[in-house]
Length: 231
Image (tube, rainbow, N blue to C red):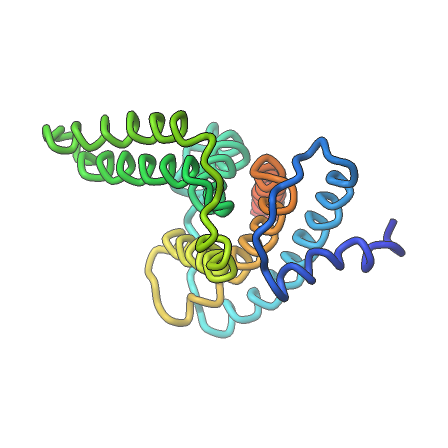
């Protein structure tokens, strides 16, 4: 298996060199699990290399450690980090990458509902926030159901390479929120998330969202286990 690894990951690096829109094959398609194993192994191997380099950078620059795990009660760490976060983040950052109208409608509803919840985070429920929450939930669900037969517009297929990289970069920068303060020197610290966004984006387009969720869950669980072992 190790001897065949370079050939197995060749499709991943070919895709990253030139991202292109494609119809996901699904996990049940022949060869999908082989592609998933190869890409996930490349993802984990890349994380090890990047983490080693960033450890040196963190020490040299005196950067703080991320506080993501410390914000979650210990009993909920594995369920939230290993299951809930991968599902939610894949839906938000890559579920829409195929450009299908139903997926874009669902994303829009999710963003509107999330904004409404953020607006009432202090506990005071404003009627407009409640209306936005309902509009987001109902609108996203309605769009998902009514637009299910609509295919991806041609212009979105042409724009896919840009959308792919925008998704990966935003996913990485989103994780700067794991740190107690944000400085320019911290930007390289989200290179693991950038690499993850690239691989997960490939899995999403080659196989489907469930494949990206599985790789994401495995990576988060491995990182959490390592943090516990080192702590």
